[in-house]
Every structure is written in C-alpha cells, then in structure tokens.
Length: 110
View 1: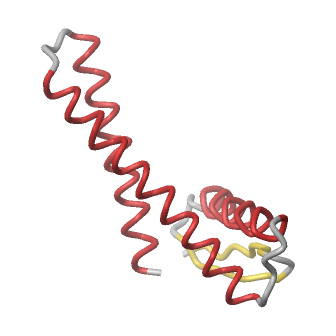
View 2 (view 1 turned 135 degrees about the vertical axis):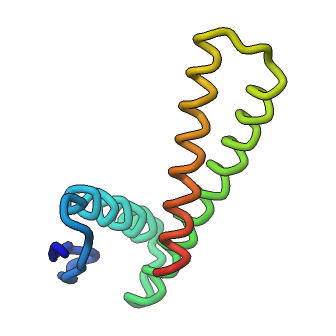
C-alpha cells in the first residue's frame, strides 16, 4: 500500500492508497482543494470542519447531477437502435456511469 501526503486548506494529510493510485489520489485532493477555494471566495470561512463539510456537499451534489445525467444517457441509448458506433458509445457511457457510481461509493465509505 502506497502512502501519499496531500495538502488541503494548508494542512498536510498522509493517506494510504493502492499502489499505482497515487496520481489519482493527488488529483482527488486537488478537486477537494478547488471546492474549498470556491467556498473561501464566497467568504464562508468558519472553521476547518465546516469548510470540509461544505466541500463534501458540493462534490456530492456534482455526483448526484452526474448520476442523473448518466441515467438519462443510458435511457436514451436504450431507446435508440444500435449500430456499431452507437453500441461503442453506449458501452463508454455505461463505463463512465459505473465509474461515477464507484467514486460515490468510495466517498460514502470515507
């Protein structure tokens, strides 16, 4: 298991991850940091825990929207007759939807 130190809101956190997932973990921490920066820009700074909760809620809202969009795309793809290109597109959409659901599940476990 790899160890990665990420910096979020000026604090360093050492986090474990699967070998080879270090860059992915760093990218995710950058996404969290981005949400925190957005919240700070609004002037809503009232403690570390509150910033992290608000950032988590923003990310959960984005995942919710992505799930709805993925469900709509899946439904639309299911209604369309499939040629070779459309079948490939449907597979890619299904993979993206599965990945979004996996990210959401990982966040739920955190």
